[in-house]
Length: 191
Image (cartoon, rainbow, N blue to C red):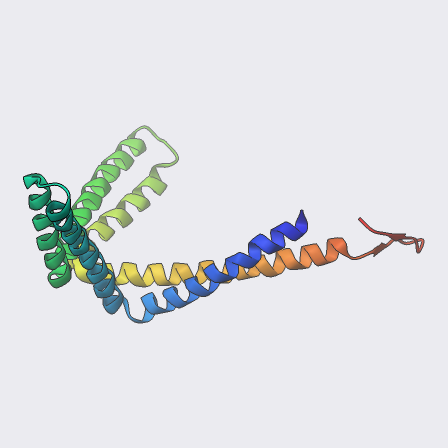
């Protein structure tokens, strides 16, 4: 059973290496990474549109299929060309949501203080942090995306390091548990 854990954890070396590489790329080149991912998504949507048109010409002569194919191609092109505007608009809306949520949490913290709840200070601090985050995203959404991309890169690097430590630990556990143990009286035991 322990050997199975080592074999399964050995597969995670792939995720460790991938996590490190992707994490470093996200950390060092966030804007290029966002552009590449956006273009890949755009190309995927374009290919879906082309697939819809191929189906239209080869199998089904459905107007709906032609319209969906055309819309997918247009959306894919827009995603490839105007990815910064799209990301900024989505993040702006997200920032507004976070900002409103922080304001509601702030009001809740004030109410909790009125009722002498001990948790009101933690709620106050979290709500202020949420408001600040919301404001930062609303004011500068694309740069916020780059910061979030870098944070994702750091998270992937930390994950890879932690997973590598877990791998080494499991190997040591298995090695220790399968080696013969000698007790104080000098008798050999194999567990």
